Image (cartoon, rainbow, N blue to C red; front, side, top):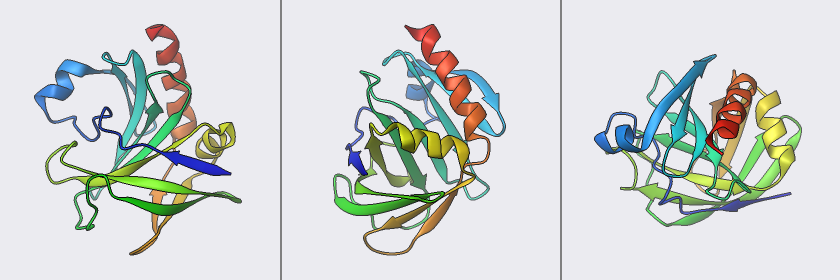
Length: 166
């Protein structure tokens, strides 16, 4: 199974503290530690969670709603460069997904870096909803784990939100 990538320039990650965010996004609701936002520009919804270390996870749909994205951002030093691509493996439960991630820096809130992966595989979305952790193995550096607790209810709320945006 393969995860496709996107630069994500049109996806404004980790921007809840900026004016641009307020103009483009509004809060739809909160569930189990996740915020659900309406993206008025794309007429779709996304979910976002920030952990105790200010790391941010975002998930949503591309403009045409045919592909899901997962983005992870951190304030920690990463060496990630904007537009740089690297191989990545993601472990969700018993499934390993292999693909490419594209780095982001400068398109998102100051001091955050990270990247997005895209997928059109419904099993990835199902695994994200059912699992409590996602382990990411970048091509270099170190592996890290993302807390997925509450994603099932957050995804359900985002699906409801997406229906209302059509």
